[in-house]
Amino acid sequence: MTFPIKLRHALPLAGGLALVLAAPGFADDAPAIPGQVDVSRVTAGTYATDPGHTLVSWRLNHFGFNDYFGLFGDIEGTLQLDPANPEAASLDVTIPIADVTVASAGLKDHLLRAGKDGGEPDFFGPNPDAARFVSTSVTRSGETGASIVGDLTMNGVTRPVTIAAEFTGAGANPMSKKETIGFEGTTTINRSEFGLSTFVPMVSDEVELTISAAFEKQ
Image (cartoon, rainbow, N blue to C red; front, side):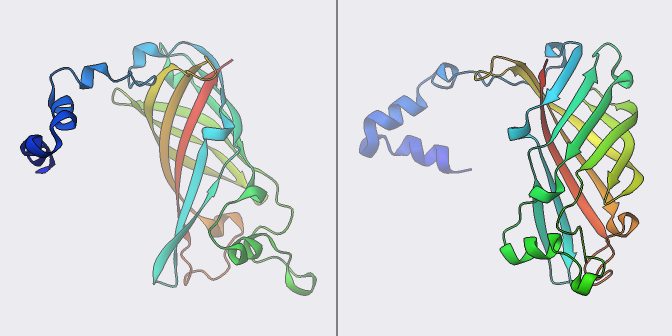
């Protein structure tokens, strides 16, 4: 909180730079951010994920010592949306489990390796199918939020999941020139319900999922 005060007091030492930064209108000269939290920018239609900027992170506790986490990317899917009727929206996305990103090569191997001596794998196995989430209902919450209920299919098991979603921005992507909208979402699942119960409860059953999604209008 004291940084701006120090900056102004630095005029005798850093004259020109400090003067420019403190000058009226300096902030107004900065380029506008393309995406804004403004629902009036959203138009009706079909949107597809921007796979390079749509992510799902997961987090769970390890032996009660600390949490560890990983990330899924290259997510593909579609969103049908009409801002005049947001509760009629529909979402269908696939998440490539085999492309999971973690900090440790050993952990990734454990998540994807085959079962020992022909047995069941501890987690996903070497060739897991992509997970898929298909919405079944959308309920608006406030001006920019929604509760998205849908079916998550993962590891061959389908279970209902509710995502708390928040609209985070809309505008024209300056690179692709496409109308783009963004959302963030959170949910918690029990991995044992999807046949992934190895080491429960020492490694927590609850898995926190955080979604950051960008959709481009088609």
